[in-house]
Length: 70
Image 1 (cartoon, rainbow, N blue to C red):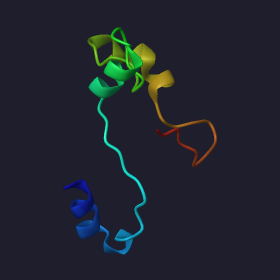
Image 2: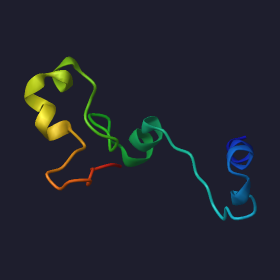
Image 3: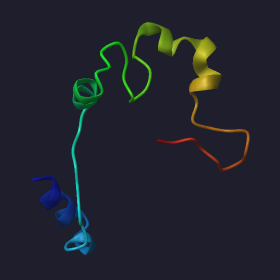
């Protein structure tokens, strides 16, 4: 079903996908045995949206045009 959606929206990719995989944070918690955190980032609690974290959580950098993405 995912590949069909990919091919529908990006038809030039058809026949060019060698491998694909799907995982969720629960998949990683199970296979990596990490139940007190996640490899996908910090928890979405109230503290995350506190103004004191704005600088460290922004994707912008001091270099013009360079953004940190994942």
